[in-house]
Length: 175
Ligand code: 5GP
Image (cartoon, helix red, strand yellow):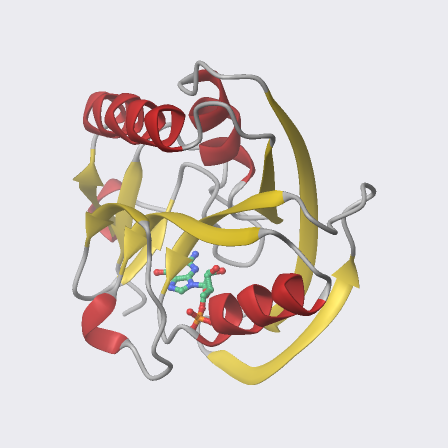
């Protein structure tokens, strides 16, 4: 990959600073409650690791994996549960941590899934909100950055399983 193939969108400092704000807002809102933070694999793993360290109240962590995107850059339109969280969901306050909410299909499905499992509450924190591409109505309680277009890589986000290790977020020119 040549350096001209990708353009910086969010620097690691910008990401870090916004995560501190999100972590503070979350800690304020969940004061005195048992919080279960559930990361959506794989894309959210880097964000999740930084976010939980910015939340100062006690919490537990878990992960869920669904398949909605294939190996390319467009959604298949169908959601399948790949791995469920190990811990019980019933009567817990769930915070879903996602990398990007795009059409909203994945998050709407996940929110309904946890509500059906009997969660006391389900909120969503997404690092990136592509709200202009929304097809399924969903509220993002803690949005990181609004981004209108382009395919993003880095900071957990992949293209064909590559680039997740980049410390910042880039726009990938898919040519
Ligand atoms: P949605 O169900 O909201 O349409 O899709 C959300 C999922 O699509 C995200 O969790 C992410 O996996 C994938 N996605 C959407 N936009 C991008 C993007 O720009 N880059 C990457 N790497 N994945 C994306």
